[in-house]
Image 1: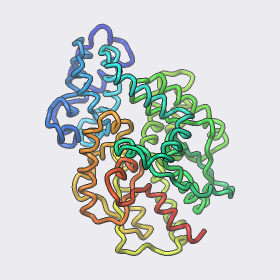
Image 2: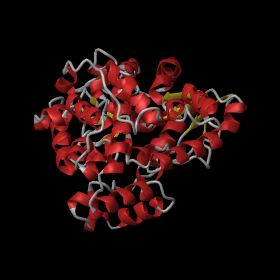
Image 3: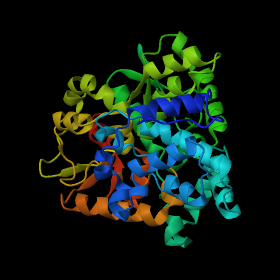
Length: 412
């Protein structure tokens, strides 16, 4: 696709990056078949091809409108379209650029601005933990819409104290320690059972995704630089990997090298951090032979474990099939939805707060497919998906590492 950049974008990093991405697009429309919002709304402008057309117009000098902004806002950034695209269009990077440009030109209503500010500042604030604890205390009194965002209080269990020669860094995350702390401790326990020590750098915080994807890209980059500073001493000491057990964070940290490529002070270190970053599931093939003999008992073969692969895992990180294959190698009966396992559940970071109507339609559609499997438990790999899905079903929803931790517990 040819584009002629308006003078204001010629020679700028955003303009050059967008132009390079647009050149790959052949406007074939394959992406519309796998776009969740297009499936729901049937509007070309609520699919990747239509949004690309809108962004191209803006880059060529057209004045964006509130309608342009709304169509871009409705995008989940699930990147399913990238998995489908035969030309390798980096849609996720393009929509970040497009949103940044459109938001600079189209003022948002005051209420909308306030909600976005609360999300990007509140979720990444040290005050989030105490606020979540307070919310959990009065959870039973909350209206359903608010209760959906406040999971029941969870016992995190013990953090292993053994030291091992093999060490990995883990990002605790900004909301996970307060909302579902057992995911982090379960990760540490499972890795400990395999002879790997989990280290957390206290100074590391939000991966940067929350602010970056809410168009505070400078604020997001500040989080990224702070994490690099916190992790670098451990990298210099030879830590073997930086492990992500929240697949949304994993996508972002794996892209530090791309996002900070123009930062002379951080570009080289950011690229190294991205190289070292692995989703927790990427360790599974090496852990299976070590962990299987440690399982006190194999789960009942009739106990069906459904796995919902998050978009951030299968489309953002391009990791498909690894979790269910490796968990099956450990003796579990793991299944994925027979229909639309590739589609987003509607969580998508802050999307379920900003676009609740669409988010809940996608949640219920996903849960309908999962219910057909009659699972005893639903597992996933991202806290957003887990919280969102649990709000619509009585079937337990948890991180797959928590399930594995439970199986290993009797042997501890």
